Length: 269
Image (cartoon, rainbow, N blue to C red; front, side):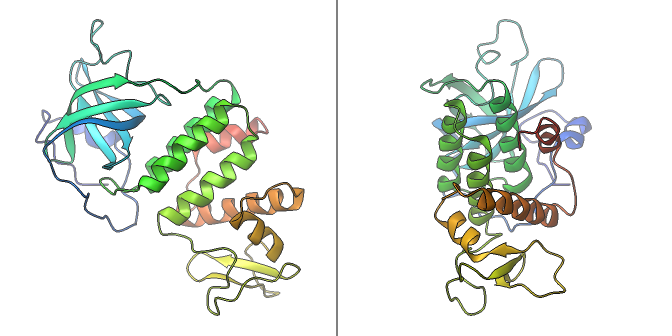
């Protein structure tokens, strides 16, 4: 459980029970420490009730990374924030404070993106759960933010969900420093060979498969296809799914993702 500085909000131990645990990654300091920030591009990942009328909002921003903001009075019927703080909608966010939970001062809907519907909506919640599990708060990662925006757009335009999700999963692990290049062997840095079998060690990277390996065996062609985002081959799509499940299971210590199980049950992932 993370240590939370509630300088900006009243003391309430229920907040501590709802916040997600910190990832094992080492946190990096944000590029900017201005106590007042205005009109920052961002998205709501999740929100938690706080007191009678407020919310604690977990957001992903382009220039400040993942943050926790308290939206005071957001649950009141006539609050301007009430209808704005929706998931999967581009916003501009303003806040003040230096503590781990800042105080939201404004949020405005930007528009320009189609809403997610049906199975795409469940895929969106899956993306948000991954970001909450893997993104350290206050760690700036503009490339991952841009990948998230692109993924939401692809899902909204009914692109193949399995392919879109595999691309995002790979980008997430690589941008978070948990996975290196898939088209190169970890020790030799030589390119993988298309017709050879490999395993991806979560700690050591890609290496030739051994008969005793319990990790999924992945062909060099699949690894190269994933590197180049070429998922037309059904074998590549199947093996990439097995690989991502194996890596997430390792990094989450076997903890199941709630949204992933729902998608599996619906045969969408």
